[in-house]
Image 1 (cartoon, rainbow, N blue to C red):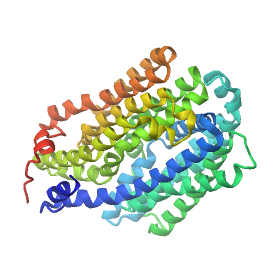
Image 2 (image 1 turned 60 degrees about the vertical axis):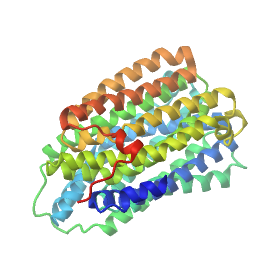
Image 3 (image 1 turned 120 degrees about the vertical axis):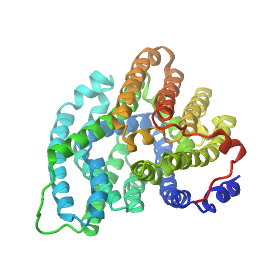
Image 4 (image 1 turned 180 degrees about the horizontal axis):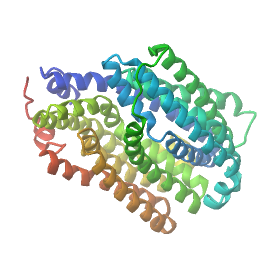
Length: 452
């Protein structure tokens, strides 16, 4: 099967397909390494601190991700877009102006958010999660938030320079390597469930420092600025990007928060392990998006929707055939994979949750990059509105279903979320651009690709 895919896509003379495969392969290698160290960290935490320690870490990470996204205000994504744009024109004076203005805004907002998190730690722990012992984790997070924001801003700036491997390695690998070292070195002496939080925070600080160093070393920032960017216009674009990303975050954070409120931290730990394992199904999708996103924008700019359809459907075919076998394996041996993280994760409900979540991830993969097509082809506001509706429905269902049906209910709401986030945009892509992101003839009959 893999040999067939290789011949059909990489050996094909179409330059677009070869470019996607090369970019996707590079991103996939980093993603694979990143997921590997992430799972090792999860495994270490689960082994040393059990489901409770993993649940505590999961709540902390969700709160921090939400706080980080609010503080960044979309300026990190803005840097990806305009560093690449201005770099192509060798306008480093504009890059420097945008960088320092974005840095100034995010630092001010980050400090305010850190103060709110520090002084509101007791309220968040007691009133939202009903777990007073979590307050110490949120106070640790208050000191970690600013380095977290700086790491994201500088990593995305590096992505704008097409330093994808460096950016992804710092963000996805370095953080967890440091965290693993800290936990492994301290777990025998410190048995507090806050240790994974401390370890992860150390990883953020180290990664943030490396990211800033690499950006300043790799960039060509001039001493003087001869022209200034229109920050009002930039802020407007950033807000659209921010509002979309924050809606995605609200969905996942609300899921964690509601499980944390109505279930035990042990239950949350089991759920997060199942979710982490299930996400392996989408590893190819996430990797291919790195090279597919700019290609969509390029073909949209040329109004070449026939080639856009071909490229998108070819990518979905690759994603389908690399994710389907993983889904089958998880459905056949769910207890085995859950049991790798410890005996308390192996019980029947853990396996059932893994099967349900894997099915949801497969829906995400089988529909292809529907949201990316809308976002990169000029329909970003439509995509944001669809995300808003889907997020509202998912959060509402979580409040209704999780208190009654627990983790199994949460898993099914997760599947419903993937349906809303993918199936509806799937038909909008057809309506606006005249093609579906998946071609059954290419998937099941391997329709021959046309060469340039």
